[in-house]
Image 1 (cartoon, rainbow, N blue to C red):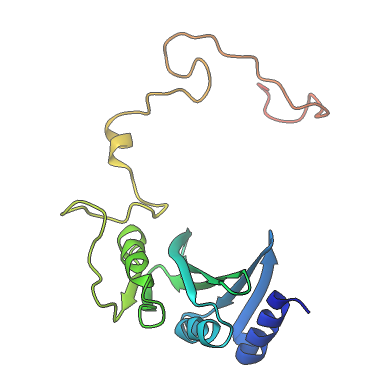
Image 2: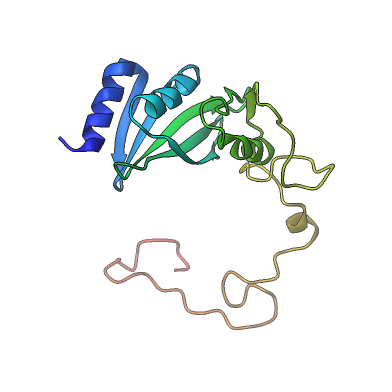
Length: 186
């Protein structure tokens, strides 16, 4: 049994049905509920030697949640894990991981600022990157970019769309697609 399989077996035994383990593109992802977040981080650090904290971020999962994802690494074995939990958008609270991995401090501040996820008991959960007075969370998918409202995007998606009179290119279907498939103007 290779090391990653031994690690996932150990996690499955420790967390039973509270952890969902998946493999995708060579990465192992462990999903737990927010209540098990700190226990999972502590377990992989103390019992499986994933002592290197690489990064933590948020992922907007519309319409109602955010994923918080942490990447940890076992230096001696050369293995990595993605640890993930899902917090509801209407009440995005998660316990801070700073007590487990000190390096989570900056990443949690950034995730708080960019997504609005609140890390309970964080030692200094204040804005990190945006200017004072900035309103909103710019990495949420529902965040409206003010510049796009005030001024249209200067580039054209297709030739002729910019209103400069450039000719439109002929729309064609991919090879093998019957001519009667698709919109009537295709």
